[in-house]
Image (cartoon, rainbow, N blue to C red; front, side):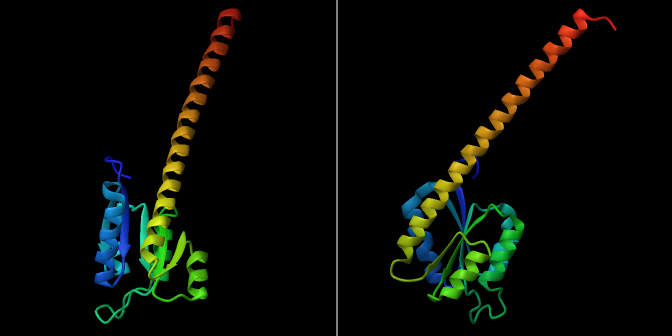
Length: 172
C-alpha cells in the first residue's frame, strides 16, 4: 500500500481483451482503492515485482502465438512467492480442471478461479476478501509494533528505576 492508501494490483494475462475488461471491472468496483498494472507475460510481471504488489491476478496459461516461450502461470507463481510470501496471488484459468486448481493452491495461490460467466464477480469478491485480510494483517502489525514499543519503554523505565534505587542506596 502506498502513501495514498491505495493497494497495488498486478493483472497478468496474455488475452488483451480480458485484461482490459478485468481492469475496467476492478476500477469500477474499487475506484481509487486499487492501483492496477497490466502485464501480458509473467516475465514482465517478474521484472516489476520489486514494486511489491499487494495482489497479483495471474493467468495459468500465458503462452500464446505472440509469446510461445513465455513462462506458464505456475512458474510465475513460484517466482512471485520466492520474491515475497506476502504477495497474494489469485490464479485464473480458462480451464476448469481440478489438478490445475490443486497445483495452484499447493504452490501458494490464495484462490483459483476458472474463467467463466461468473469470473468477474468471483474475482471481485475474492479481491475484496484479500484486501480485507491485508488490511487486518496491517492493523495487527501496527498494534504489535505499538505494543513492542510500549513494552520497551516500560522495561526501560523499570531498569532506570532499579538502577537509580541501587545507586542511591548502596555504595560500590
